[in-house]
Amino acid sequence: MAAEELEQEEEGAHDDIALEPGRNADSASEVSKFVNKAVLAKYDVYSYRNAASILKNSFPEEFAEIEKALLDFSITTKDIGLPGGNESTIPKKLSDSLRPKKWYETRIQGDLIIRVYEQSEEVIKGGKAKKHTLPPKEDIKLENYIDGHKIDYVKGKVALDMEWNSKDQTFDRDLYAFRLFHECGIISAAVLMTRSEKLNDVLKEIPQLNKDGSLKEEAGKIVPCIKKMGASTTWMGKLLYRMNAGRHGGCPVLVIGIKAEAVSDWPPKGKVGKK
Image (tube, rainbow, N blue to C red; front, top):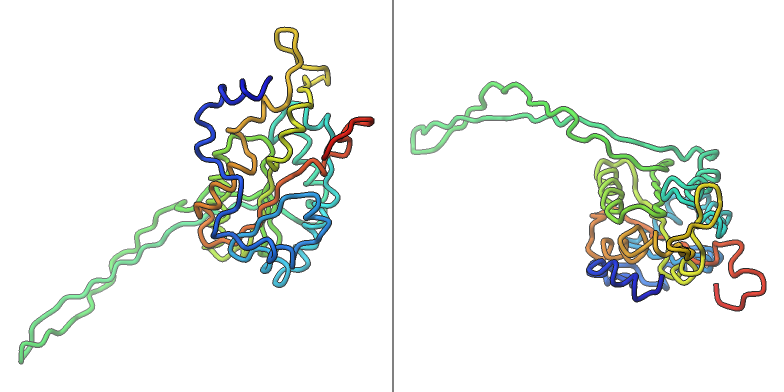
């Protein structure tokens, strides 16, 4: 599918896209102080609310495991071409690195207890007011006030999630979960991983595959992966828009974008081009 056709198909989908970190992000020079150079070569990395510094200095063990997982993470053009979205083999490759090191899926649930205190007031001699504390009322309990919010990988006070090819609204869920976990004191920083916009040129050339690995065709033409991974799915442009708007609240977040350097068989043998 031509780029022009894609743009027509997703008309209006570009209204909430940002291709650069906003003024509320940490500087690139600050990020380079704390993130492994090999990671920076393989991924786009952006830091918000001093996430890179916090991870490196306050949680060195967890951050070292994340960086090791990122350097070990590798996908193929076949992985990209196969159907499955966020349930494909790609997120599972990250799990292979993190699960053995006790990065667990974590969900929180909590009730809200409301206590009401009342005071009466009487006017005494001299026109002064005297307050009297009344007997306490019965507590009000809102069950499951916090419920259903989960993060795929949590260890200690660090969280990590990955979105490969879901609807872009999934980022809102992730950022709200980070924010809530942070406000509850469960985590101190988070990492959110998705695909970089720099991967788009690769997606335009890699064909979609059926579940059996055969080429997917429409009207006798091979269908490129970019068609299933358009502007309204989870990718860096949709995530930076939300980060720049501050939807992560007070939670420090390190944003990771998967570039072509993470695709082990790209460019194809004999093909000249940049990764």
